[in-house]
Amino acid sequence: MNTNIPPGFRFYPTEQELVNFYLHNKLENTRLQDIERVIPPIDVYAVDPWHLPQMSGESSITDSEQWFFFCPMQEREAHGGRPARTTPSGYWKATGSPSGVYHNNRMIGVKKTMVFYQGRAPLGSKTKWKMNEYKAVEADTGIRPSATPKLRNEFSLCRVYVTSGSLRSFDRRPAGIESDNRRLTEASSSMMAPMVAERASSQDSSSSGEHRNNEQFGAGAASTSTNVQMFEEADLELLGWF
Image 1 (cartoon, rainbow, N blue to C red):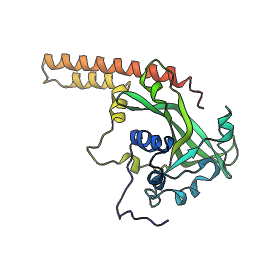
Image 2: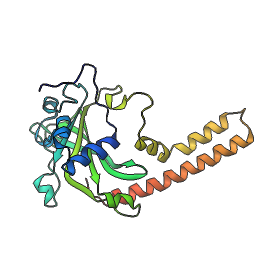
Image 3: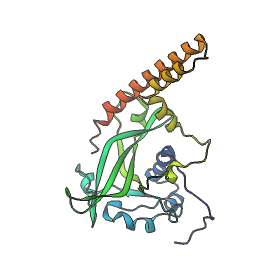
């Protein structure tokens, strides 16, 4: 593939950008020519992962760590069945639980992580190939916290990458560039309250007023963590996306 990408270019999309811009435009059939030059539509489950890099779009075909694709919904999935994740040489296996992708405190998508195993289940050998599969949430269900998220299954956005034991380009965005999703994740972390309390107790030179402020902040973070965690567990268990 011939590209006009200058030397040194790196594709650094956040999860928020992947769902809110790229996947949204694909689902709405808008800007398809531009979008598919960057992220092409490919059935990633029909191809072994080591063949995918050469099939990627202009933005990542020269990358050595990660590649992006739009994966169409399978026919069996359209009829209510589970998607087939078996390739010619192995299979993709889900790991962990689905997690939400947020924008402006609203869930806009759901992420599922998978690992590729070479061989036949259940005796396959785990490889370094991994994938994040993103699906968008219907706009109306994402707005109401009490509503069960309804996924748009026409296409998912897949980020395929190789684990290397070091920071990947997905984690190396330039300093100062932060997404709303990352800030929400930090705020909703169950570790936030203990960390704040520990920092407050270690600052011997801080005043009593500062100490009270830290305690209040820690309590607020703990409350946020509880609410977001309850929301995710209640809604993601009902998705049936396993």
